[in-house]
Image (cartoon, rainbow, N blue to C red):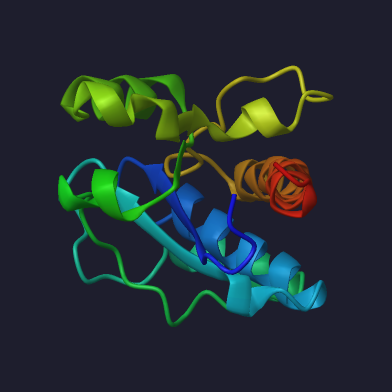
Length: 165
């Protein structure tokens, strides 16, 4: 990987108001802490058009704010076919959204799509559960999963960037 190339990362869930904006915020915060924000383009999207233009769910924002992360600038958008070309890494929050993305993706680009929790091997879950219909504990759990996967993903990407070809 070219060390000067910006790494483009897209987090994807269903509505883009709970899980994927949380992942966008957590990952952005992580790369800022490492002083590498300029190396990344980070975004999030939903596979469905339920909440286009809306802020993240108030409970997701509150959970993030309690941990020092502001999600208020993020607005929901629907995943676009052009995202397959634009982004280097498309990280699905769960198997359902992975399957939707995989089915819509041109065959030559499918290796860009991964389950986000693949980067948190110490976790038993493979899916980041949708906390929308649950209570505050669900949002806290999602945040914890996203933090773990963000650290694993960052480590994986930075190892590839700094390893000579």
